[in-house]
Amino acid sequence: MADTDKPLLIKRYASRRLYNTETSDYVTLEDIAGFIRAGREVQIVDLKSGDDLTRQYLLQIVAEHESKGENVLPIAVLTDLVRSYTTNVHSVVPQFLAASFEMLREGQSKMMGNLGVLPNPMAAMPGFDLMRKQQEAFMKTMMTGVPGWGAAGTSGPEPESDDATSAEDLAQIKKQLAELQKKLSKL
Image 1 (cartoon, rainbow, N blue to C red):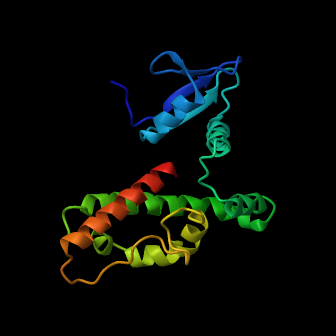
Image 2 (tube, rainbow, N blue to C red):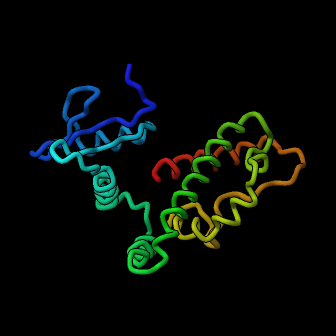
Image 3 (cartoon, rainbow, N blue to C red):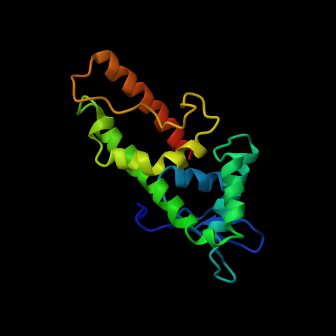
């Protein structure tokens, strides 16, 4: 059984073919994307020079998905990323993006863990209000044009009061969480 705690090592040969060192076979970019979606970390290195090419290939995977019409990154976000390379802001952009996606992952994980245990998983998530306030501008940009999300930049349903939640409300929350799960998995 493979050690999934370590990154999956992919070697790039001079022919530009990618070789999975665990299974001893060649893989495609789509295969690598599948490993990542399954939760596996990958590291891609050039066989001859030993250079780490992971970032280059991950950007290529994102570019290919975007070019196929699987648009996750709105033009405004892409424009801001390009601008960040030419300003002093570029030093905080990686930390902001990493923190934003980490908060999304943690929030998603806590919401799914609380689903079925508590009547209102959104309200029970620790730090939900703080997270919502800090991420509002980011989510508004990320979700521009995504059907089902509020035009005012809201990131889903508002937390309910501590009153008992009816079965209908719970069903609606579960539906919204399932939609959120789909959208987050595309990120």
